[in-house]
Length: 141
Image (tube, rainbow, N blue to C red; front, side, top):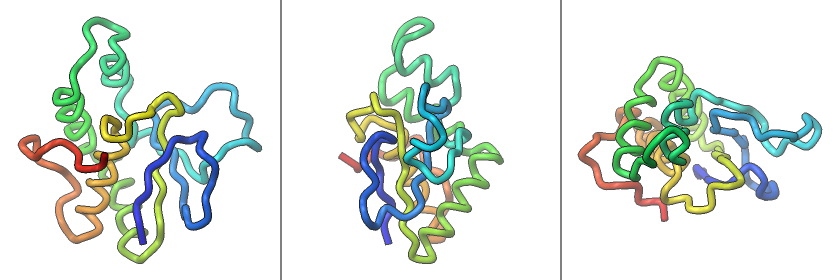
C-alpha cells in the first residue's frame, strides 16, 4: 500500500489507513472528538528550535537545504528511529500510512512530511531509515 501525506485538517479519505499526526505541536483548539488523526508522534516533527528557524521566529529564516539537513539529522535519534521503524513495518506489511502535518503547511515538497515519507519508504524496503545529506531534495512535489 501507500504512504500518503496530507494536512491534519484535510478530510479523511477512504483508504487513508493509519493517520499519523507528525507535528511537534498539537493543533490548538481541536477537541479530542474532532481530531482527524489516529495517533500523534511529535518526535517525528521538527524540533522546537528547527520549527522556529523554519519560520524565522528567532532570527533569520533558514532555507530548505539547511532545514532538510537538520531535520534528517534529528530523525537519526533513537525515539524517531523507533517510530520510523514502526511505521515502515506497517507499510512493508501492506498497510497504508497517512502522514499529517500542519494546516498552514501548503507546499508538501517543502515540508518534513515529504522527507519522512522517503525515510519510511527506504526503511520499509529494507534500507537505512535515513537519507544522506548529499541526496537531492525531496522528490515529493
